[in-house]
Image (cartoon, rainbow, N blue to C red; front, side, top):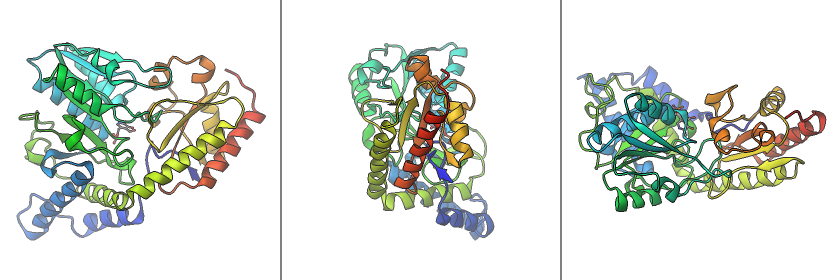
Length: 378
Ligand code: PLP
């Protein structure tokens, strides 16, 4: 199998599975229990939090584990609106956010909020000014992702934060960094965002674990889950200790070799752009700065769903857009307002540390065969 869909999810290394197994089978105590098996887990949870926080560039006390990136996004949106409920009922976000943010914003619309969805250019680029010019005195929240999961475009969060501080210091800033964490360099302490969402399964960790950074400007954050008081009383529920162990181990493994991994991904991306770019009718999408692990292209005229199925039958896993939108046209591609024959043929390749140049070459060959043997029907 050739797996080129690391933006959808990643395989976990054996060491991650081992760390999880140890916690599931041997160190299985509840961190709230008073005997040593529980106390050991309580200490371990704080150690795992420190590991993830260090990689994110923040104090451990500012990081809260969640059940996934989606939960972190939903919590950030509602907590920011809650904190700024006296400031106003306006949110600025982008038309290309992950549905975790978009649907949270739509839910806020039902609560009487007005949401401005900033559209990208046809190359996926969104500038800081695009965002800042949509901000109003009553804007409670700006939510803009760090890296777009379908295009790989990198958005200027630091610049947006600086602009907000100058123009609207009370507006809170959330960034969904699920595709940016350990893929592009940034530190929570200096990024300027008040909320940062991350997820374990995009970096070689297990599914079902994420985290939310909550910055110091957010006083008394709104609890997500009231209950037994875990996660500083903000997100109750018995800790998912095995998931946390796996998340922390994955972070450790990636950070140990981060420069090497990122250089490898950037080289793969450049190689993919070159070999795929040589296929007739193939267009590389996305402009501006980009994350190293995602390349979005369109085989103009050939429906992406057919390409994904054809390559899938040859053991090559690529995506026709976000894995969360199977079968439905992607809102991200739609926001680019491309001609139908381009938008209908969009596919995404995404890379991980295990991806090889040979994987890319074999995918390119299969794409070329698809082009040469099937009729364009868009
Ligand atoms: N945000 C982005 C940008 C993503 O790519 C994803 C996953 O596809 C999520 C949020 C959701 O993360 P999770 O699958 O952990 O809920």
